[in-house]
Length: 203
Image (cartoon, rainbow, N blue to C red):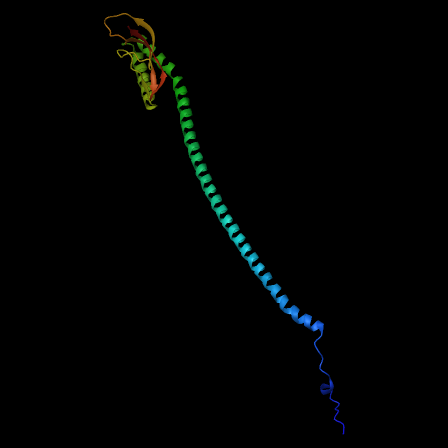
């Protein structure tokens, strides 16, 4: 009696592993070992990129700080320049106003001279003298309100900053360098001379 069966599992002979199977099995761990250093290189690259990003951020922050400092210094400079400009403009306006004021007042001084001569030549008993005296008083008050004062001359020591000596005399009755006569009245406004006094000085 035969013992053969038709079951293919039992009849199939066992086969040895082929060369291809061996190759595939041995190649798998090699691939795994190659992937490990690649991952390490990728981590290093990531670290380098993060360092660069940090450095770039630090550079940007320092750049912003420098730009902010420059902007603040520029604002300070502009404020200082504006303050200097404002002060300079104020001084210039004041100087222009003073010049115009002096030039205007100088044109009224010949009127004072005419009134002075008219009073000198008008007798005391002349009715017109009172009118001239009233005009002269009004004129002097107007000058005083504008800050104009007459320069003292007769009996005062000669002052080259206020007096203009056109004559000199030798007279022992007067001290040396004393103004003995005034030919034309001088005026000043503050420390500024509008017109020098024309005088005679004793040597």
